[in-house]
Amino acid sequence: MKKKHLFLAAFLAANILTGQAAFAEEADAEETVVAESAGEAPADAAATAMGEDVGMANPMFEYPDVPSLERAVGFPVYYLPGNLLPLYHPAAHIYSIDRYVSDIRFQSVADDSKITVRTALIERIGTDDISGYYGEWTQQSAGDVKRTQVYVAQTAAGMRVVRWSAGRFAFAVTVDGVDDNTFRNMLKNFVSVADRFAHKYRNFRLNYKPKNQSAQPAEATQETPAAQ
Image (tube, rainbow, N blue to C red):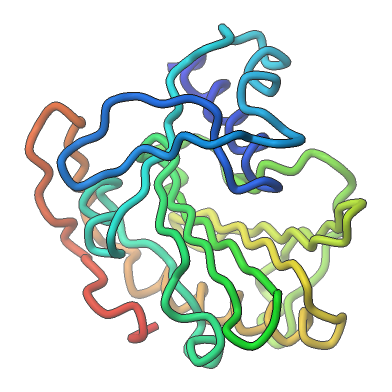
């Protein structure tokens, strides 16, 4: 299990900036495996740095919709704050990373800005950091949600990365192509909605099935992402 989590951590790091994967494995009926070039941060390089075998299977799967994703991972996933839906819904890509982390990617309909939203169940993944970023962080409160401390970073290319946890869930968001004021407002909205999300699903029951078994819908299936 430790080796599994090390590889997952490496893959998170390899894909947070590129949104791509390097290898492929067999998919379930409702999943499509991503098999693309990883550009500047290939998954095999990250795995090698973590002491893993080069050529391990790509754990990144793409789904047609959020309910399919939730059935695969076994827990409810965070989508978008309602005020961002007009610009970013529907999602451009809906992924899971080895069925441990949801990774949903959005492209603005108005400009080139992009958002990636990740969710994981802390008790299942064993960490509250699913950002994949290992540089310098600053800690701050998020707007009016003063009890929630977030960690914020900015990459050399200007992409902003945020991570935090609430209740049983770990969250990470990357935002690219927005100005400082827009980012601050986004951050406040993301954290306040995530706080309500964590409270709503605090007592849900994990319903995860191994990939060789028939997956059942998660107890807290999000049939309409816009409801958040």
